[in-house]
Amino acid sequence: MSLKDTEITVTEGSTNVYADLGYADAAEMQRKSQLAGEVARAIKARRLTQADAASLLGIDQSKISRITRGQFRGVSEAKLLELVTKLGRDVKIVVGPVRRRTGKIELEFAV
View 1 (cartoon, rainbow, N blue to C red):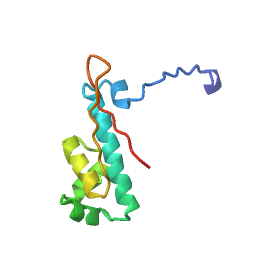
View 2: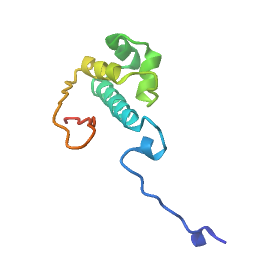
View 3: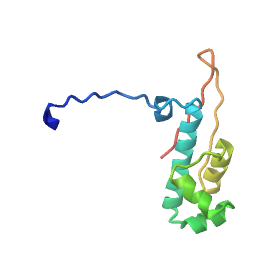
View 4: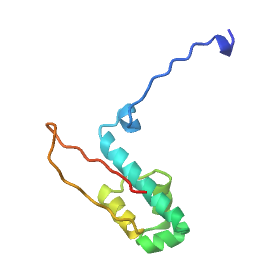
């Protein structure tokens, strides 16, 4: 049997890879991932080295390295929001009426 004859099954995922992988805290993980990505983009946009970013943000360079590589377990959403603002980004939190039984948290990044 050749590769050409092999049937491939493709399963479409959701918009949240953490939910697809079965994480209980999938929504939080996705938000933290988005914030970590914003930290990495802001560092790159400002052309900061990790050492310079660490000095500016008041955290260890190793933590900057972990965050920018997507390893943000142990870093709170609040801390990531703080880092984003220290890197010169505005954060706006909007609280509105719920249209379902439970509310949700979404992040939207301006360009």
